[in-house]
Length: 128
Image (tube, rainbow, N blue to C red; front, top):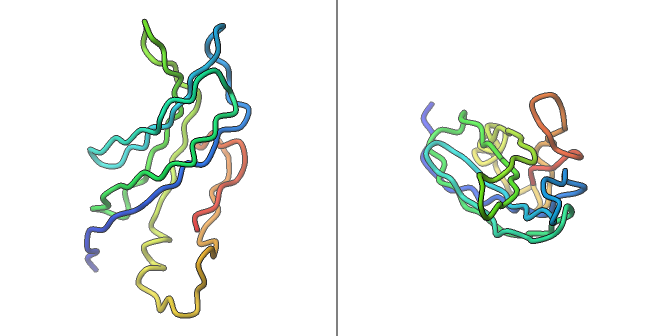
């Protein structure tokens, strides 16, 4: 079964109680990786509880490839510090797209991603 390439919009909402990486205050931002794509949110200065509320759109070639999410602290004079990371699969979402969506309302939770050893989310996050 082949999948047509498509686009996936990921809304990066916020970070909660991120680890502080600088004495002068952290400047966190999020990077999404999929295949050879690398998309970034804006940097929110001097906070460990950033609110981005930004949409990043990725081209999906293979739905079996997981999306990697990294949270980094922007540094001016040195390499940016890692604050956390997570991976999530979108295969369940791709299966939903092939279904009859007439009975599924906007905002329906398709999958829940929970924190774990491979996923440094602070709390569970929903794929809607």
